[in-house]
Length: 72
Image (cartoon, rainbow, N blue to C red; front, side):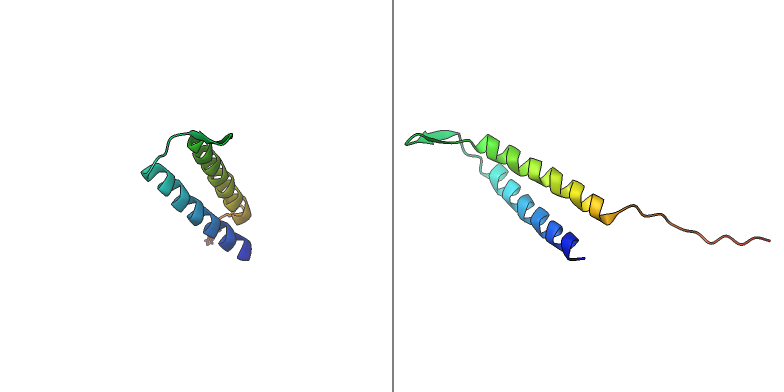
């Protein structure tokens, strides 16, 4: 399934971005009237990760394991 492959790829990319943001945290700052909030950036990444993981789970669909039963 191409959709699940794309979602898995996006999850891998987000995981790498979250890892990079947490390994080398940066402070919030403002330059020429533009503010950069690293905590908001990390929150945005984790929210997207949760959404993608939920989407992946929904695409997988419900599965039931069927067992064969012999009657005697």
